[in-house]
Length: 577
Ligand code: ADP
Image 1 (cartoon, rainbow, N blue to C red):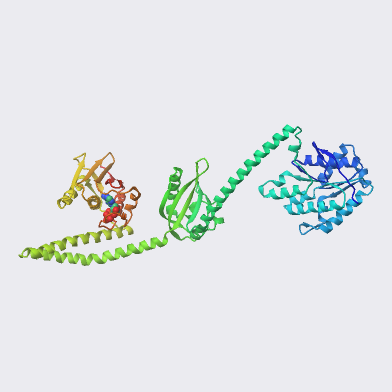
Image 2 (image 1 turned 45 degrees about the vertical axis):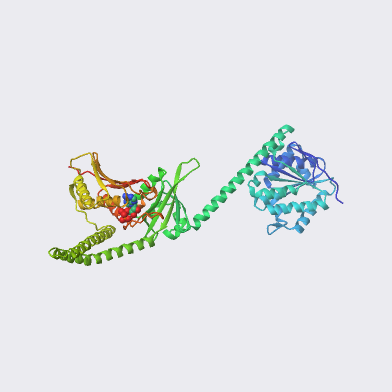
């Protein structure tokens, strides 16, 4: 029959009166003190004491009891004090990481029965469960606690377990912690709580802990939300068909998604920590400096078309969109780059250009021949009295001129594409050129009045290709007239300062929405909006004009708002003496 036993022992200010007590602790010193006090008190009362602890804890517990004046050696000889190394004790009943109930009952049943002979009670201090938790096996610890409880039903003993509080840091241990507490008839909080002596201090501590628990729960919820966002974004990045890469402001790669691996041929492990310049061709290395300088100013880069290098040394056409990455304080700390493979599109464009080049080249000869014959006929009919045929021939000639101009423009475009457009550079007066063109256009124009405003009568001397710059002025004038039906004026202004001359063409027509201000300079781009009237054209005039102006180290830009007319301005460096 089990003896009815109850141990009463002060630990800190706590009294252990229960059969199965758990004490949480923060420091080893406290653990040794608590266990030493618990076992020492039993020995002094003539009870048996069993210590299942690590070697160093055993030594500490015995030292503590010696200080209390107990003769440990004699108690051991009398069989009143029994010690077992915790790891050795575990080895006697653990099978495949779990306590075997039969072996456990056998081993400890015998030890306890032996110890309880001639003793009024048995006290056990054990840290077997602590070891199991320390090796990351809390479920075995819980199972072992159950076995102790079961053993306690047939044998009478008091068991004192200890767990380090730090072993339960982290939300994942919440369940285990609760389950361990549930296995004990008495739970003692760690020393920072039990050291508080007055009721007031304890209430205050509990209130503070409640507040802390609430704010931690809130923090955890926020963190989970942030984690969810993080994983959601990570999943989007990983599944994206575009390469997504991030880097520091020093150009060091910090992330590299699956599509980047496919596009550039480098695995994530190969490139993380490496400079982004490994995928930039040698002749384009300066791009990186420009990109970083823009990012530092917080400027986003959109659809920048360029070329990058693959691991195997081949190049790939890409369109880059790069945005600055900011920290919580708003400081720019890096950049996220999306690279889209535009090889196919480039190839299509190349084929289209090739087709346009060939087609216009093939058209040029027959049209020139036609034009020649039409002119001959026109001359012949001038001497004959057949005004109607002459009128038809004149109209034929005008249409052939239009066709020739169109073919020439298309040929020029393909020359630009191939870098074969030749510029004949000379010094010329921009003012005089503008006057000539305005006179020619005005001569055949009834609908608009072209006004020339200039602050000077003197020469505005430019070094460049006079015909090509003339083509630009002509394009701008033609557009101004074409897109301002019903308006009466177009104003051409010529200005210059110490270094630059500029020419602007202002109309009072349909205007251009800001969203299209850059697009209209792209090849074959025309603004088409559902309600918009259609205008004839190919969408190459502005592309061609900007190309020419840029080749002269100048700039061509637009100021316009929808419905309020447009002003196109180019500026060119003045010719030096
Ligand atoms: P297009 O032959 O179509 O005129 P451009 O390259 O000269 O080709 O112009 C491109 C597009 O820009 C035009 O289709 C038109 O939508 C717009 N655009 C050009 N100039 C003007 C202007 N003065 N006013 C309004 N829209 C203009």
